[in-house]
Length: 248
Image 1 (tube, rainbow, N blue to C red):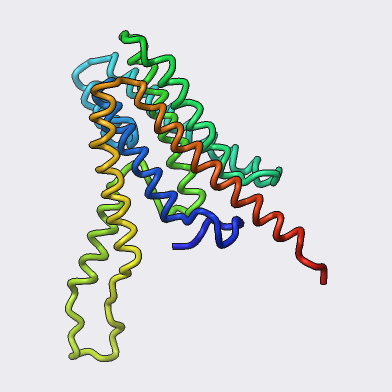
Image 2 (cartoon, rainbow, N blue to C red):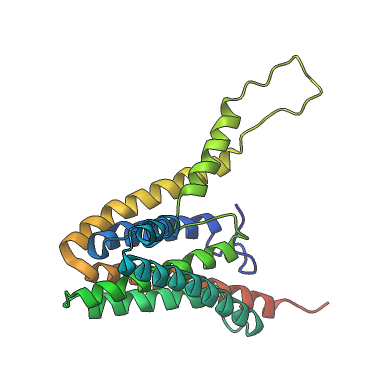
């Protein structure tokens, strides 16, 4: 898996960033469920719940689900806006901007939502977490050219199953002209890592959210700020090296 394009050989690798963000998404998804009663990192379940609620005439669930889907959509859209704006103003790596915004929103949720326990906070927290996950998913998708997704594991499990099937396939010698089926082992390792990171983040996030509530988003925000800082620092080093090169 390649490095972040445009940041040089010392930049954070796509795989490393994907693993880190999968952990964050797992923590937000599993931990947030214990507080708001809904998973917020993937839209399939929310859309299905809206369909069920529409049939059962539960207007509140339809409204909440609609706000969650809209928030996820707006988060993804804002990520694209920030990244493209950053590419036209290259004073800092463009992919750092959405990560910094995600960290800021998690920090605000942890500070303001920590001491407050009310139904209003729950209703506001769900679309906010969906917005954050949409922001993150679109950012990683832009970085990796849609090769890595971090907020939902359906595609990861599917791709991992495909690679396992390739690995188990018996290449018979009866048809030597046919190309051999070969599994992509580095891809398998990455997919398995993303899956494990999501599960580990979910377990630790659930434990933290259950005991500490929304305050648990503060260390997640700190981790995202560290990732963003690493990207910015690497980008500056690359820029300095390019400025120091002798002209043709």
